[in-house]
Length: 147
Image (tube, rainbow, N blue to C red; front, top):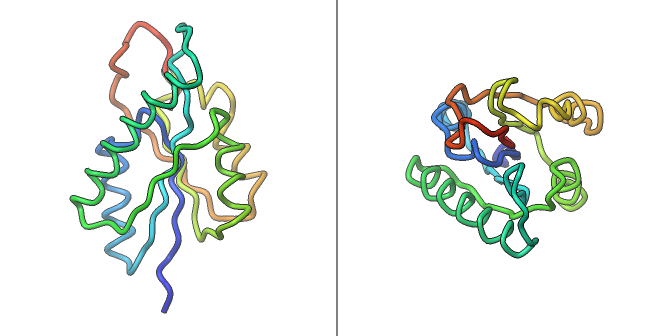
């Protein structure tokens, strides 16, 4: 039997404990292959070049992959387009998914929730979509954060 294919869309919440719990839960249900997509975004309020945003996002992606692999997850990582919906679409054009997990901060801190991203993902793709929320306060507590 083929492993369940689960795509995770996250940015600054990519290594959060809430997402680690979800990954462990999915793994306990059977074989899974995860693809973590992290859009190359700079934090709001900063002026960054695309290269700087990609380099910063690569650090986030690498740290998250290390954590998930430490949990025993079969996972690959993709540095995606800065627009999360497009990053997800780019991947799903070439690979199928059984589930999409969208990880965000809570409503007050999440740019993705202000953009209604979880609902947009659910409407755009004919795949089970799960939204998980990281209740931790972003490291830059005074500024609004991306997911």
